[in-house]
Amino acid sequence: MFAFDPYSPQTDADPFPLYKTLRDEHPCFWSPHANMWILSRYDDIVRALNDWRTYSSARGNLMDELPNRAGATLGTTDPPRHDRLRSLIQHAFTKRNLDYIDAHIRQAANNAVDGFEGRKTFDFVEDFSSKVTVKVLFRLLGLPPGNDEEVRDKAVLMVQSDPKTRQKGPEHIAAFEWVREYAAEIIKERTTNPGEDLISQFVLAEIDGEKLEEREILLTTTTLIMAGIESLGGFMTMFALNLADYHDAQRALVASPDRLTDAIEESLRFNTSAQRFRRCLVQDAELHGQNMKAGDFVSLCYGSGNRDERRFANPDVYDISRKPKGHLGFGGGVHACLGSAIGRMAVKVAFEEFHKRIPAYTRAQEKLDWMPSTTFRSPLRLELARA
Image (cartoon, rainbow, N blue to C red; front, side, top):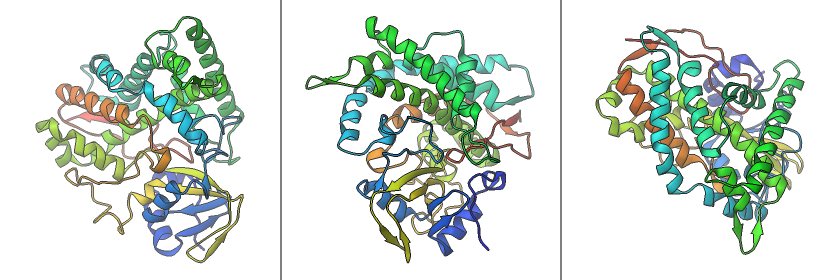
């Protein structure tokens, strides 16, 4: 009997054959392992993303939600409250901030490579992506230097789940509470002494005399620390994994860095780190002969939709010239990722510098250990060797 278990290490290792079976034979599938419905076809996922009146985010969007987070962040609210939050927050994500961060990404990338210069092999996660993403995040949010590694470790723990207990464990909850308290102290300081960073802009943001509530600022900042470190780090690491596995693509990008933009979009389609997000049904819904009930949770499998042959020709082929319009690497609908422009730019700039220093590399690690997360998918380590 077919089963889909998002807590299984085997699913983490290679979910794509399971996704294909889901799409072809069980497009609306009840998973007792996840205790929710699984939607796997591109068109169904897009319809759900755009139908927030039926598929609500207000009870949380992570497959295993963190306590007291739902209802206070962009990803865990529905319109009209979501629209208010987005209007207030999006002012912080301006082109000025993109231009401002460019030089810092280049410096962080080169500093990271300096740290393993002369070594034949290196761990891309530990030695490059984590260092770059933490530096970028600290600069954007204006976080005080000195505890970079601790903040990163807590952010990574926040998105993990225990595959045995099938829920967030005490260590994951403790990590969330630590980051929340850490953010609260910084917000308190910026409230009385604002600067040019994103947190200060959240504190000062105002439309028609309305500001973000204290809880909204706190949980938005906490979520950004999590997403800025893990989502961006995973995104960057999966891109490196694709290029290490597909040498023709790697050589093409080293020779023509202007192709990085298209290659990044294909990587977001082919091997996105953002695999599955959840919704909760506000009303009964029928899909593919299945009767889903109000109150049921539903998983939207972005990773499956991105490999749906009904949408993308030859979806299991990594083709950096594809230009995959409409992929789900950054979600979609009202909840399309607000930080997508910064994420895209950070990966592009980081790899421009990385390829100048390391123009050829291969994977030096055959078996990958994947992060235990029902929402995100990226390797805990990625050993690469200079070619």
